[in-house]
Length: 439
Image 1: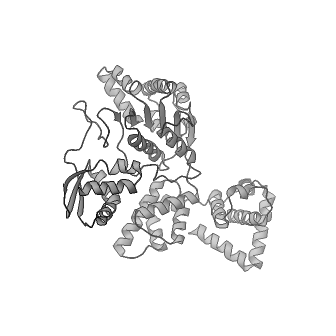
Image 2: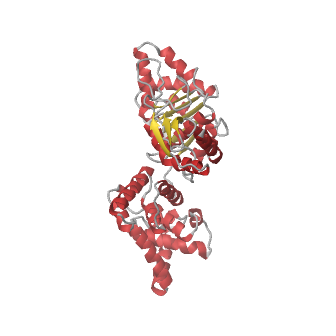
Image 3: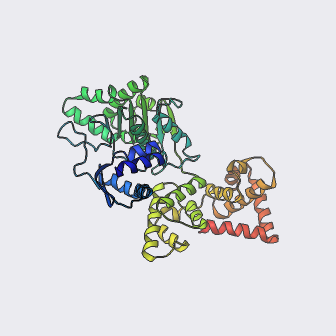
């Protein structure tokens, strides 16, 4: 059978987890040397398969001397998990009825697609461990960050991994709002005992997102607190996410706050320059785009924080480039990004420090160190000079950035000003950095 031969080829070329999630669920409706018609669970699933795996399938068929047209169609009746006439969520392939409850999953929110850096390495390591049942980081994790930094990506990566490697796991994945709605529904139908059993007796892994929305909802806090108490004490795995740090959540029951943070608490901060660069390059590759190093550098310096801005910008670049039939250039990037808030943000001392660190290939720790090596002191003095030039920070504040006092900053400004007047190389280097900061 042609399709079986193609599947065997893909099994040997793809990671087992990836094959199990995206290839195994496909059913072959028709096949011949001229065409193969496959059926997937829904149109989003099919679109992802078409985008990522059709070429691999055709390549496998080509090795057998065939060039069939391959179509991937959505099933006419999507598989759903239903216990009554009420609406339930779609099931992923291979998950049995009533086994778990979860939000719709993004196909790309997997561990393989997550860019790890200093800003998120602890959260990623803890999620990866919990997904495989490793208790190195304990059995309870609380992640918090502002929007667009990867909380949902990591949470869904855990779900993907568990569904693939241990599908028998009894798992509940939902938002705090969904938890509240479920509780209210059971209260109205006088079935709270059934509600408790679902989350306590029939749950090996609980994932609740956006717990900051529970502020002021005392009854929901009380119910979730009871569930967390049982699950954590019995060694079950729990992952909670929030857009606000637990100590800043006002109007939260103290016992509930304590229970949520009884395990590992970690925040995800904005990615540094190197991580932003890797994220941008990864997104560009996924969109079949290529940018010059200068343009990637520009994006990495401007697109800080919310990763969705990166995705939106790259979509804009691809659309305008295709529409105008021209390669992306700096003018196009500036035009696309002109609407972003980040374009008008004030220069920050930290941003200048990061730029100097990247330009001179020294770490920010080196810049703050007591080292007097020329390779460290020179970029440190330039960073102080640029911070004085582009920000309103006081001499003391600038000095504090580099573990120095205000007199050292004054000396640095004097030295760089003198060297720019005497040495063309220094002037060109500082002018180039100023140009990057002003763009």
